[in-house]
Image: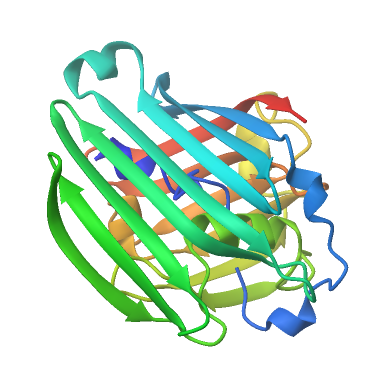
Length: 267
């Protein structure tokens, strides 16, 4: 299903978007979250020989003392006429006074598949160390529950992505490894990543002329359910400034490798 594939990942989810570690105190205590305020990243999504079967937009805005990231992903062109998908993900995050880590307070997602619609809202209660979620199908409550937050594992996929780019979990460099527990519904799937130099890599050779200025390749392992893929493998292409300029979601069911590349950046 392309809806999950172009979400997280990109980092998403997708994009979704956009996306790790394990010891918070090893990161940059004075990291600047203002870097992301007003940032808009627009991606084209493709597979095989089709260069644009969907689009995904990541937007980061300030709301008082919080940052709100919205990912809007949808199918396009001929594919949209066959299997229309439209996904929206939104996470509101506070900024930790000590570490500058972005902490999710509330998240919302809506998935439209042709005429079917699903939604989920998640609220994070750090005082009681619990996150609660509720899902809807066609406007009716479908499921609700809660999940205990691990001491260092209370990020959702969006907050993980931006904390990673801000090097909250540690320095992003060649050879760095990250592993962190995230929260999704009633599970805590691990989010692990390995960073390698793009120099001389197959990815640099393949995307040369299409995606410029690739500095790092990040190999990410996710819960396969998040990408609707066989193994949950995601490859993210970063610039020296840690801007995600491309990604490849490997072995997505029904599509094979789904790829995305940055079309426009506004900041």
